[in-house]
Length: 481
Image (cartoon, rainbow, N blue to C red; front, top):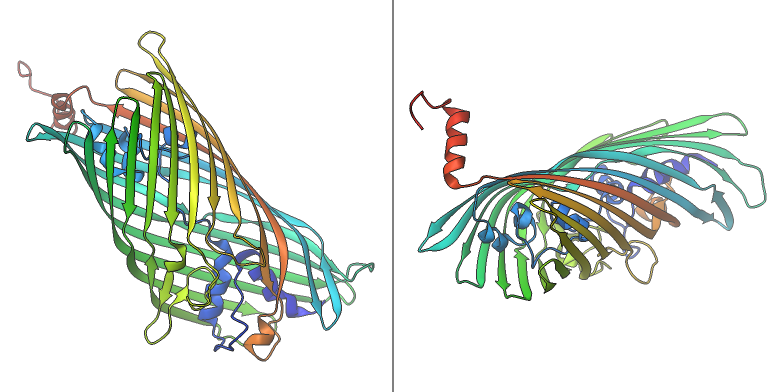
């Protein structure tokens, strides 16, 4: 096997979309870099924070009765009566298995042995401080929050062989990928209890994204021992202002919640660097500046309360992924997912379903909650030859304990995704059509995620005042309260 597979191997892990077969665009490193970035992207569906909600499969829009409500439905913050401080930690491990990859070049098939990769990541997922007050005899809550919306952490090492059908291996490959970074928000939210049943909420947030990856691929020809290598590095930056609104309607046995995130645009910059041991058609580095439009989305949720100690929840979310586009001056908008002109993209609007339940146990002054959930998360992009886009299935379990003002929640989620991945195979070609020849492999991903939430409710607003005085001023003088 010659060097022509080396860019395939970079793109095979990090890159999914193919350039449109109906045109022959200029082949620059910035365009290639966007392609290479595609497969490293996780699902961009924004799921709310908090271990309690995670244990219910993320179906929390109509419940939304703690500080994490801002990430599901900001109207739920109006239910809080005392100040709250909360922090959420999460950890993730993922295993990806690649199999079934082959490419036919001029009637000669080339087969590749199965390979796999795995990685782990974790950190602070959410932190917030909520302060309720009273306006016109109705509750008004204000909140400052941090939320890591999308975790780009990925990495691992793959080793596999290439061989003709029925023949001995012809080449051995090793690939190392490292990716880090995230999209996070810093938000200010307000929620007001308009009536006894109806609450409204608004969030204004600064979205900030920074992620980078590097991929090193080495091919060894098993016949003559020659070695070829390629290293690709890319840095991405994105920022913008976003707003979301929510409403929550509460009855004795039923809650209804609605949240809508408005579409918005932000600046998007990509810088790429490529180093190879063979001649290639790209400049060694480039930087691309553009605008990235984030699409609107809405979530409708219901929460049934057949018993005081039993809750059933369901959420449906609609994401306008076909409206997520990259805009460059003087050029047609391209789909963010497959980099085709929007009119040619196969990216679709997709809806997600989430279901959850919670049973509360009350032994004495300690409250224990047991939770379970299930979710179906179809992705909007259809990058392979699938008849429909891949769907992630999520199973969740959770448990919580609270006593006095302290609440601790723990949740576990297991997700599975099967998809077909296009891969690029011919960097030795003289044109875009030759270079961007594609084949497909099957990728099966399995991820486990743990969430830990710690929440403290101050006993009263006076108690918060005393705490802040102690923190920033000092202990009260003797004889003074």
